[in-house]
Image (cartoon, rainbow, N blue to C red; front, top):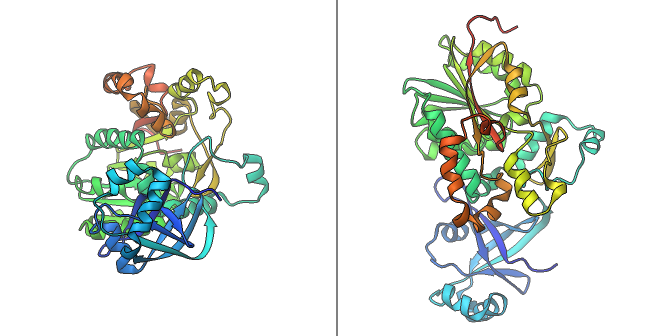
Length: 407
């Protein structure tokens, strides 16, 4: 197999136990992988040596490896780095290094992809259905598989982090310090921990137990354990969270970054949420759109006509954690209609309206000097018609109606 340019190294925090992921240049020698740390006191180095092991990803393959110092091999490793990455580059980046680490694989090499979006799935919906899969079990397994690298995947993507910042800014405008709120599809808890600083407590639900395990570890490490209550539930079973709130119903529920796209029983969710929220309560949620104008234009300019609307047929098959799962995308109109007459629309914002979808982030960054004006346009125009109807995601603020029994 042709050697990759990078490996991804997963270690566990020495105190927190949380996943720590870095991308490293490497060279293979004698059946082992050698890496050169820029700083031998880096967390990933100390984590790997403390546990004497780490998890390595090379392309789509993941395997366990023992970790040990190999500084006596530094000279030969440096020469191999020069052969692979170039002499000038190696001396510029690693010339002052005085240590190297040897990663020796053990156990099987497992094929495990990462979350990679609409255009990477190789399984058709028909084939997936013919497999007799249980939807919720398959979604849970996919996100379980993706959990340890999930934060790294999101955080290294400019568009994803931009969407997260914008979403949280809008959400915060609806929160009160005394609120007990409910989060639907909390994932690893990146938003949960942030929101817990603004409110009294967060009841965070997710279908993936491994995602919830990471949230528990984060809450403990961030001293937010008393403010975060994780529950393993599908969105459509949200009424089961009622006992956690007691007599006082939550005023705000939120679901960000398309978690509700993986809930096929959306009408049931709307009905149960209506019963959970207090009168005039709010749902702040973002879902992926079935037509993204910036995506279509990006592929049009690249003359990739077949890729202009990969969301045309529903559900869309997406790749998560090496598994292909169906995801249900909605037009803003059809999504809102699902919640009517139980909820009314207060706000609708495209996330983003002019920037491309997250899977095109690297392409966008190449031209950012020329297109940075799009980011300024987002602030002023993404919440206005018609721009708010054609984003990658649509953030909708829905208010619970008082004049309905939810039927």
